[in-house]
Image 1 (cartoon, helix red, strand yellow):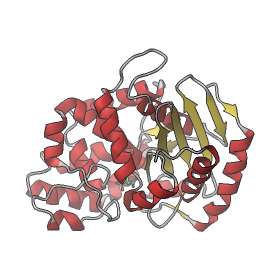
Image 2 (cartoon, protein in one colour):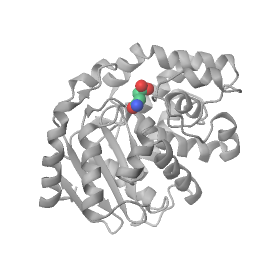
Image 3 (tube, protein in one colour):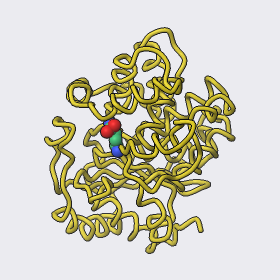
Image 4 (cartoon, rainbow, N blue to C red):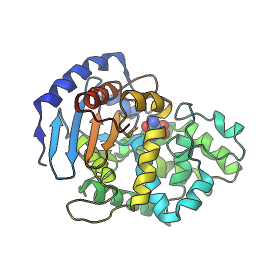
Length: 309
Ligand code: GLN
């Protein structure tokens, strides 16, 4: 991997690292508790192939909710926009990512967007394939193409740990199955979803995924269209409106960089048309976003005037 350490970025990382003591590593998925609270790293990947880094950008972590962006892109490629958005909405919720509340108050019981757990479960349910293995293989193939890294695989220990404790996600699925939104076997869907969330990457991989999205779905090096431009646009827009859970509005104002976070501490970010950003910092704030990562993106946005607004 060809990625240079940048002194200015290192300085920002060190400043943002001070906030990591104020957060907490996720523990509701027991295997995530192994993470080191003060870790914080950043990679920037540009369409011209330039890469800058600060911190240990080779450290591995799981995608968690960042996978929702990729699963959505694949489900739309498989089923088309109309079918996907018949089952999941396009509106922010203002509720925590794992909330069940709106499912009962909305009629039909269709999740409000694909970035909350209920919506992401419906999306995973729409990935084409005759087995979990085939569906996951297709999702991994997309991740391999976007990262140009075919060694990316699933952290089976994290997947198992979440599978054994995903009671709330099971509840969401059974509720939606009752209302005809989720189809098929719920245990299989939970297995697919927890494995999807346990795809293991580095900051560098995230930055390259962001770069491909910033470049409208095309790999600038090979000129290969990995995602149709329209699908890249849809997922980027969801990153702005719902990507940081119920902190998306504040994040849009303070940072203004399309981003998707995960409870592992991952943040996938991008600045159209040429920059992808990968951040990892497992200490989370009360909304479940990386506390150091959010600070770091805020500083980065201010220093380099990166807000898209
Ligand atoms: N796998 C996690 C869950 O479903 C993903 C949530 C997240 O990253 N916010 O709880």
